[in-house]
Image (cartoon, one colour):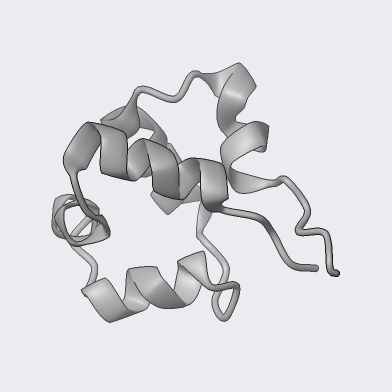
Length: 73
């Protein structure tokens, strides 16, 4: 299953300026974060928790940012 991370990407840019900054804050390589954002590797629950905390995503909004299915064209 593929997920649509466009809302997450937008929030990262709005709050932090770049995905590189987020990668540093969660102590991951930029390439690792990129793989996750491109559906090549799944986010761990710990990463979802950390990212949500950093970006101010409430518990009831996690699904919107991390589990919205990607619609294939």
